[in-house]
Image (cartoon, rainbow, N blue to C red; front, side, top):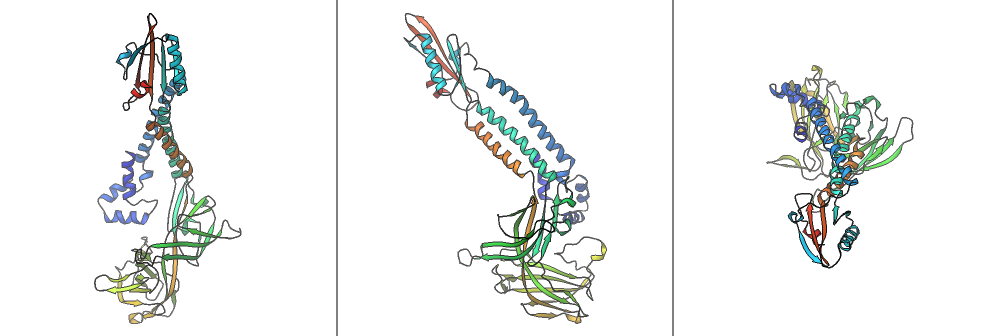
Length: 460
């Protein structure tokens, strides 16, 4: 039930991760959107019904483990039960006669069973033995580890946080809430108390396979950072690679993506420079065909550009402009220029990677290579493609429940293997004297689970 309840949290946008997409989803579904919002489907993991399922699972597992632990503890401290009255009804029953006296038979049986690590009890005319107590121990260990895992996940959800940020070469990041592109924290996390570290992306290097067999496959991605652990502290150089994060002040910085930022110099109709920095373009395919937006609300007139960046440009009648290789071998940018109201004064949040052209007029289309410029139609300004920057996407996370959850998962797997591969079983030996030096020996066994056969133990 908990797994089913988690599905909306994976399918639908969540307020803690992307509030803008939540707003867009509700606006695009005016009937179901508000209903689902009231039911908590856009903040699933904080919804009361999800917490109720989580707590019920927690309580039910505890209610299973505690009485079974008491029962298992008594069983481990006790002795194997004596043989049943009708031993011949038990699985694997065997009987034979021997000239060995009764006590000698039972002594030999008890000694042999103890040597093979059975728990043995001796009674008048019988020996009882039991083995495989670790099966139930493993079962209880698995459930106890599941409880610990639930606690670890809850602790991490309450006190953990993570966010994503895109950083261009030569620019920096400071670990404050306003610097993140997306951020999500637990219910008990105070964003004002984030670790005060910062870093600058000095250089990003990416390399791709050029052989025909694996053309375009990634070979190397690494970022050189200059890190300051806290204000006033000396800086240190750190290299971050994929799966080799940087740890600083309880947080880990993962390299999760990269792309290109064409440097566009934009001048408006009055000749004022509106932009001369790199503009982040987001990759859309494996060859890094990328889309981006440049907005200049303070220009005269207000200008907006929708762009397509191609690291290695190609053009055909079917696909149009596209990139044929992810490295910047032959870069080009295709721009669509718009003039008019950008919609930034309406109070509705906008994505920096999307342009609302409803109140704008298209000025024209142009393709630019590095060093080329475009005089916008109507004397509305100029835009020049100066060069190229790289950007890297980082995920910064603090998950205090991660290590306990890992330990709990390992313990749960150990317990599961014990419960799957160890068999709990009992065997009995009964010896009676028939007189004239004849002893009748009977043996039988019982498997404490449905599967398995005890005959081999009885034969031994």
